[in-house]
Amino acid sequence: MRVLHIITRNVGGGAERNLGHHISWQCSRGHEVHVAVGSETNGATLGAGTLHLVASLRRTVSPARDAVATAHLTWLMRRLKFDVVHTHESKAGAVGRVAARISGAVVAHTVHMPSFGDGYSRCASIAFQAVERGLGRFTDVLIFVGEEARRLYAAAAVVPRGPTLTIPSPIPIESFAKARSATGAERAAARARFGLDQTRPVLAMIGALEPRKRHRLALAALTPRLAAREMQLVVAGDGPLRDELQQLVRRCGVSESVRFLGWTDHVPELLRCADCVVHTAQVEGVPQVLIQALAAGVPVVAAAATGVREVDAPSIVLVDHDARDLASTVESVLREPPPAVGLELLARWEPKAVECGLTRLDEALAALVAARSSPRRNLALRDASCG
Image (cartoon, rainbow, N blue to C red; front, top):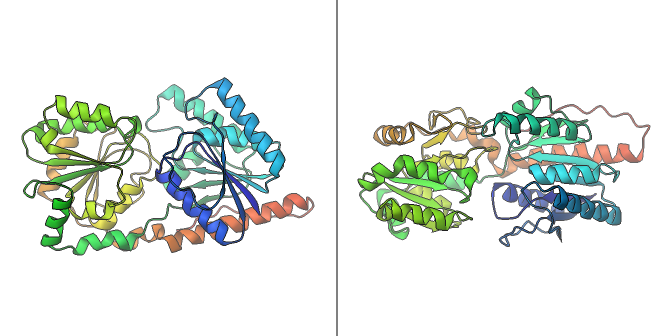
């Protein structure tokens, strides 16, 4: 099949890592894969697909720019005549599916993060629900990275014309689980490599430095403990808020207790020396860092949001959405760490298990493409979930 994936940006986040794995898998199956991506990029690879830059495709809503992006994508689809158009994330999902509606291609969409519900104002949530219901009417397959998001969309009557599937993001669980057996000397060595104090508990925040992750909220809650040198915080990730957050840390006088690592691919090593992962994102799909932390045996304190309850285990301790009790909850977790989650609960994120879902999706898309070319063929496609 000739497949076009459409994504708003490429900054090395969870959605892009998920898509990169999907593209590599499709290429290994002999499909011709193309990727249309907006201009916001840090150069991270998206796999072996043919890349098409759509400069007008941006995250922010702009009727004029969005119309240009839709026209660009429509032209691309007419020129290359794709069998499948697969959109990712909210903006690319809206613009891409509108363009694909008249292309004759089978249309799939992956919800990496809900576009309504927790973390949105009431008016915005209602508006985006209505948009998603409308787009669902000409979406052939709807994919979710987690069951919580799938249930949210079903409750809001957002349904596609064909099947829905749940396909988690691939995470090498065994690689992260090695942190569980690290010795004291190995943990001390890891702290030394990151320039951390050997005597204070280590909190880790891992993710893009952007407003949605709410680093400022976490810093405001934790500053008194950081100033008293009761704990230390490692911030791993990069993004538009880095300078602002560093200035905030200096103004609060906690520079000696907060370390910014920037983007790093040494997350397993960081989790080896972490005592707790803090997660305050406003809205999520299924945060990959939470699954990584659970695999490493590190407890998580997270603000309540869709996706953070994907694994029902005491290792994830939730505070309310505004994270009012974040500091006291972190202190409690540090005093009495909850038991590590059983690795069997994380098996669905193993790459081999994820490929089961990709195979089901591939079969569903192939059947829909065949039906599109043979209108009289009767297909009975049922909703499916892998994992």
